[in-house]
Length: 186
Image (cartoon, rainbow, N blue to C red; front, side, top):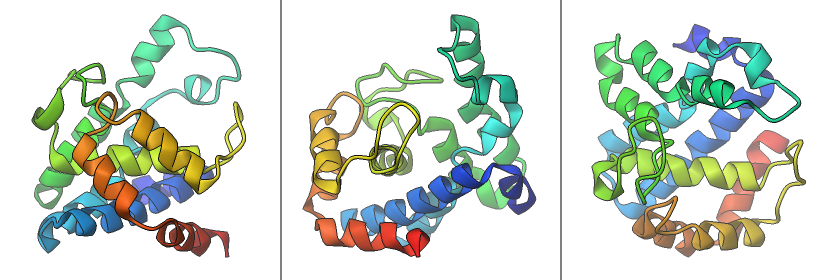
């Protein structure tokens, strides 16, 4: 898996490492047992690994994706799951990778799981993933300030994200999130 991780582009690797750090803090705050925190952290690091199976013409397309291209892109959690489940020690992390794009309201993908049917680790990674996306500069928009990103997380609580996970996330001081962000910036 490490060799596969190194094949991801630099921005995706940096994003994945940040999501892993955010997920660890969030899981510990929620009170997840240490062994499960380890699986969540590992899953967060590899949550985008399935994108290696998506054609670069889709991943880096500068225009809006067609419906067919969106369907191919939405297969990446399944592809990541298939890659990771081959290793017995990664089975729990693989399930998180498979489920991290599900939405609390059941409108996510790839299986349209809803609420508590989504593994807790995947619900944690989903919040960490979105938070990193919000606070990072993207081609379609500039980065958000941490407080703006926190407000967005609260806005999507109950639809995209588990309200309990978002509540725990919102209780973590902004200074903690900023210090984690600073690790890769230095």
